[in-house]
Length: 111
DNA sequence: CCAGTGACGGCTA
DNA sequence: TTAGCCGCCACTG
Image (tube, rainbow, N blue to C red; front, side):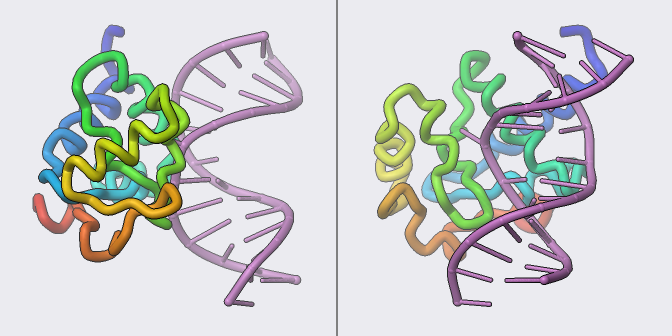
């Protein structure tokens, strides 16, 4: 882990950690905020790497549909949903309820 | 070195 | 409206 691209990962962790409780965001939003607009996949990759690294609320990051696409990487499939519910986010069918309302844009709320 | 895959997103048919 | 394809960047085999 020397440096360079790691900056991108570090930025992802920073933003995700700044997500307020009860709020959620999307990969594309983070990617766009970091300047990697269009490369939302890299954000997902960063979260996978962030999982064992630190306590990153990755469960607050979902896809553009508000679907818990990454629940599979939380160990148990319901772990992500449970965590979201503990944060005050309602989840139905592995999907965030009122995703638009709970959506937290780093480039808009943070900026 | 080349090919396939992946926690996504946007466009086209 | 829904379904399918391509594009993005990085990692593994």
